[in-house]
Image (cartoon, rainbow, N blue to C red; front, side, top):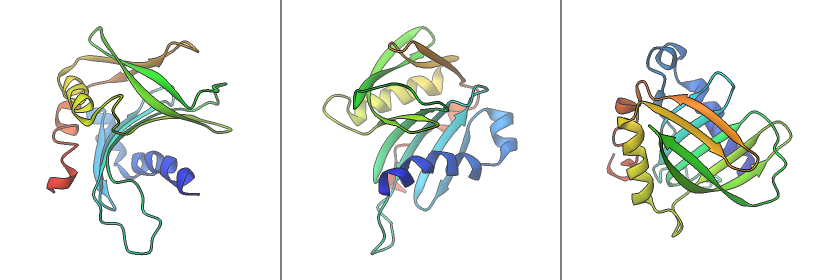
Length: 168
C-alpha cells in the first residue's frame, strides 16, 4: 500500500501544478505536504519528477519518503525482470547512467532513484545542476531501447535548490 501511494505522488504532484505554469515554462513546481517538487510530462506521457521531502509527516501516518528522490515513469508496462536498471540521462549530448529501482504495474513502469553508494546525493545534485543549465534532455533505457525527450525550458528556476528540503 505504501509503495503504491509513493508512485501515485508524481501523478498527484503533476496535477497539483497549474497547467499554465507547465505549458509556459515546461516544468511545474510546488510544495505538497512537505515535499518540494519540480517535474514535467512530455508529449508521449512520460513523466520526470525531482523531489525533496521534509520529515514532517503527521504522527501515526504511514509516512511518505524523506529526503531527495527522482522518479521517471512511462505510461506503459515494460517486460523487465530486474529490480534495478541503469536509466540514462543525456543532457546536451553527455550521458549519465543512474541506477534506478523498477516498479512494473499494469499500465505504467516507474524508475526510482534514492541516494545510495551506487549513485549518491552529491552525484544527483551534479546531474540536476546539469539539467538546470542544459538545453536538451533525453531520458532512456538501453534494454529495451527507449528514449524519451524532455524540455529543459524553465528547468533553471524549477530545479534551483530543489534538494535543500532540510534547509526550508
